[in-house]
Structure formats: C-alpha cells, structure tokens
Length: 445
Ligand code: PEP
Ligand code: MN
Image 1 (cartoon, rainbow, N blue to C red):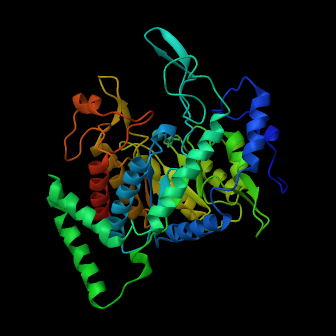
Image 2 (cartoon, helix red, strand yellow):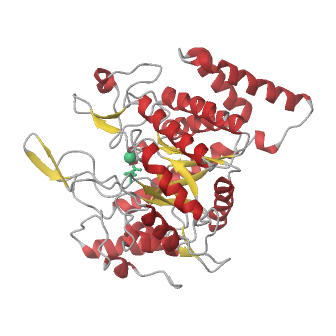
Image 3 (tube, protein in one colour):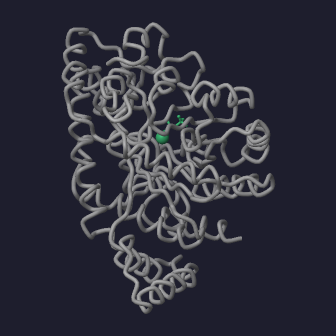
C-alpha cells in the first residue's frame, strides 16, 4: 500500500491494545499476504454513499439503526441466521422510518464482527485457566487448550464468512425479500401475535394506511422493492484491517474495504493508540464508542485527530454510558462538541453500560434499562436542541433468552433456556421489535 497509511509494524510499534498473541510470525505474514490479494468486500464508493447518509444523520435529517450480534460466529453463517437478523432489522427500520419521518440509515453489525476486546486475557473454569475467547477471528469458543490458541488462519475464515454473509445480505435486500409490503406484513403478524403487540397496533395501522394511500395514487417507488443496507464491525485485529485497507483507484485514497463502517471500541480509543492511528488514515465513515469516563476534551481530541477537516458524516460518536449515568454524563460532551462547531452523528448504544451477571452466572441486560438509556439519550438531546441520531444495539432475529424483561417478561431463571451468544447478551426478536416501537414513540413526541 502506498499513500500515508502507516505499515503494520509501525502500528504495532504503538503498542496496540487487545491484540492476538500469535506464536508463529511466519504464519501471520503468510495470512496477511494472502488477505492483501483478496477482493474488496465493499466498494469505496459504497462507503462514500454511507458517509453521505451519515452526514444527514449528523444534520438531524436521518436516523441510524445499527444492530446485530455482539460477536458473529463462523458456524452462525447460515441462511436462516442471516435472514432472521436482517428481517428484524428491516422490520425495526420500517417502524422507525414512519415515526421519524426521515430516512433510516440501516447498518448491520455483521459480515465482519468477529473479534472481541476482553477485560481479561485469561478465563478460569473449574480451576482450569486458559486464554480468554477473543472472537472467532482469533480463537475458538470451546474451552480447550487447542481451541483457545490464537490462530492467524482464522482471519481468512473471517474474510470468507464475511463475503458469504454480505452476498446473502445483498441478495435479500435487492432481490425482492425486503419489499416494504412484505416487511410490513411481518410487523402486522408481530402486532397480532405477541401479547405486547396490541400496544403498537395504532402505529402499525397508520403505516398500513400510509402505504395504501401511496398505492392508491398509483405510485410504486423503487424504494418499496429494495433497501440500502450497510455492513459494520469493530476494527480490532490490526492484521485484518490493515490487510483490507486499499487505495481506491477512483480517488487514490485509502479505504478499509472489510466493511462500510468500522468503529473503535471503548477499550482501544486512546489517542496515541494504533487503532486511532489506522482509522485516522482510512476514508470510510467511522465510529468511536464513548463510555462514562470520556471527558469532553477526550471527545474533542478524538474528533480533531479522526476528522481534522470536520467532514460531515465521517465521524459518529456512539455513547454507551449506562441507564443510570447518561443523563449526567452525556450533556457536557454534547454541549462542548456542539459549541466547537464539530460535525458528528450522536448514536446511543444502550447495551454496553447495562450489562450485569445474573445469579446463575449468565451475563445479561434488563430490557427496561436498555429503554431507559435510550430515553435518557433522547431527553438529553431534546433538552440541548441537538439531534438524537440513532441507536446501536446487540440483537438477533431469533427467540433467544439472553436479556431479561420485555413483554415476554423473561426472568433470570429463563436465561438458560436458549442462551446462544458467545459474548454479550442480545435482544431477541420480540424485544428488538418492541424497542423499535418504543423508540418510535420517542421520535414522535
Ligand atoms: C461491543 O460493541 O461489543 C463492545 C465491546 O463495545 P464497547 O467497546 O463499547 O465496550
Ligand atoms: Mn458487545
């Protein structure tokens, strides 16, 4: 690669956090060399389109829905799994679009979300200590010494799994499956069949009437038949992200073509860190997670380093304070960034500040706390006259039991019934749809 993107060894010299420890450097070099020859998963022009859409979010003229697994798994790349995730996201997007009366920018946490930062390098079970699971990009979830070895060959598996996922997503979103009438019919089923659904009957009915009106006047817009959908993941493993960073032939600018949007996590957002350095050079739209310890000066410095030209749509701040801290913690960040005239999209991740361990040992989140954080986010922005630009959620289209609460009133004792996440707990299908209807109410006030 040319341009001014630092080489991999320069990034490693910055002492990056949360990286795999590979034993066989030659095997790493071989994998990276192979990855560099692989075709792009996304086009730079698509990244630019998303950036334009996110600029509208930053201006208050669009809303972002970003969601998917905490950690995708290689074995989870099946038609059913990808379809269910996509379906629930599309269902949520219809409700939000109607409520917000602005475009909803749809971004999946998928086709690349395979690497996880961990609070500890090691995990102990029943007196046995092994390396922690760091996502399928790095090692296996099985609790055995062989599976927990950091294996660079997995990066190629991740590339292939991401390609397969994205291929299916592109087929679903442009090949008729995402037809608005179809998606609305699924929502009508949800409203009819779920106990909580009745509460949302009115909105569903209004959407029905709006669609009937459009059909009655003889309009059949292209947007009824296809949707724009984008991929995203945390840019964590430097070998992978660097190998997928390419110079775009159109613009001669570097893009990370492993996904449309990549973000830096709460644990790797230090200003002098390798992740901030790498992402400062790519031209994709990017995000940074901001937790409760973020000072306004930290946010300003990040904006300055990652978006020195103050390009709208380039930078999204994804705040994850926790329900109990957002009302106190968020205002000073938003005030300072706004006062400085900095263009960012503000997005709420109501998941990561609300995780706790149930007495059974399962990591979980309470649906009410998730909603409470989103409500706090809306209240803060409404109070300041700024735009609550979107939500970033961990969810699945399946009927898992990982988060407690919601209209199904899942209890801690239910968690073991169907707990499938290999990392953080996700909202299930019903909880995700409910969240969309509740956020719709917040958008309409
Ligand atoms: C995540 O998004 O799964 C994650 C690890 O988030 P954060 O960096 O905000 O903790
Ligand atoms: Mn997570």
